[in-house]
Image (cartoon, rainbow, N blue to C red):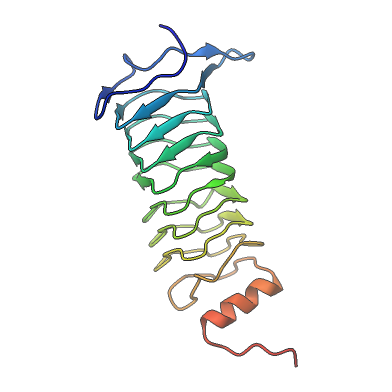
Length: 211
């Protein structure tokens, strides 16, 4: 099967039989560059250990797709839905996932460096072993998320919905915490800086003074 850029028909069902054939990376793993799908229903495709570079997915639904140990670079998922997908130990670098929804996904060991995840929906997600660095997550919905021990360094969480989320023991240094209300979010033993402590105090309507 030829490789290269593909565009799917609206709401087309895509399975492993229909998925484009890969290029072969220097380490022998599958490599996909410049794929494009719009409005596709992608089901049970195995992308374990694959590399996806500069791929674009718009308004697609991913069901039971395996991204285990996959490497995604500069790829875009806009207004997509991931249902029952496996992301453990996957890495995403400078990817865009704006307005996408994660539903019952395994996100164990997920590593995200850079990119825009604004308006993403991850209700009740288990992010305890995930790491996010330099990511824009404005207005993200993390209500009820289990984030005990998560690493969120230099992440913009302004306007995020965090009701009943648990960030106990989380490393939040450098992140925007203006949306964190300790009355609604568990922050026991979380790691923050002195400047961030001021943001937390302001969320409680406290008056912070030098002396």
